[in-house]
Length: 300
Image 1 (spheres, rainbow, N blue to C red):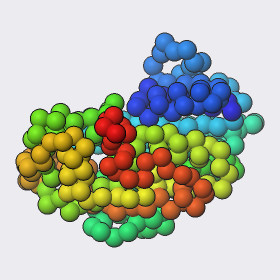
Image 2 (image 1 turned 90 degrees about the vertical axis):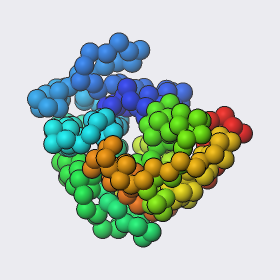
Image 3 (image 1 turned 180 degrees about the vertical axis):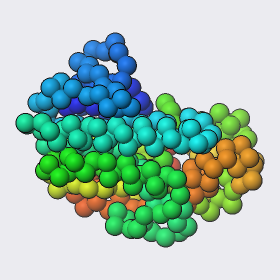
Image 4 (image 1 turned 30 degrees about the horizontal axis):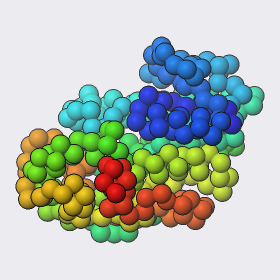
């Protein structure tokens, strides 16, 4: 396949490109800034509404990963605007441009997030569950709706709602490793909140699955089939690292340190099932947390 990818320099994009190229797919990067790359590069500017349709003609598929990191800093009004606008503006511009092409791609696979569901306690959530409340839920809804022009054109559009992506190379797990290795890790808040996690290997696998499986469309939860509470996650990571986990982080301390972000990212509970991925035949590499952590951290 001839595939166009945005957000190609991030953790997921880098891993996905390596995987696609290993399978002999041809990859072109759609980037905001000039980039030294082995792959062809096309530039765009979502904030300014600039994307040359002629330069994205002829691709079989598009993967859209670009967006401001939700953990890049405290959620000031300006930072929240960056998080929202980088997702909605980029998706809208890309979708509208694809819809105008004489020969558009067959599929557009977009990143989304489980923030769509908000804080839901121990309720079991599937793709048809109602939207939650809060900043991330609002962002995710607008982000997914921004792809409507491509959907209306007839493209198969998939929104992969990423959970907590686990990799020692970046993201939440990489930030947790040092305190846990030093023996000062512990539960966050009361530890009862569900964390719906997924290994980076399965993120890559699910994106490949979405590109090729014509039965998958719309929203799909990209989480492992066995979500755990924060207490279970903490104890499992401590076990894998052979370190104690006796230093809890109270909810108040998390809120003082991170503000609103603490409630949406650390203290929020979302018990999510990957119903549509499983129904369309995706087989998880890492369905179990301990097995996933041991594989990711070389602790087998």
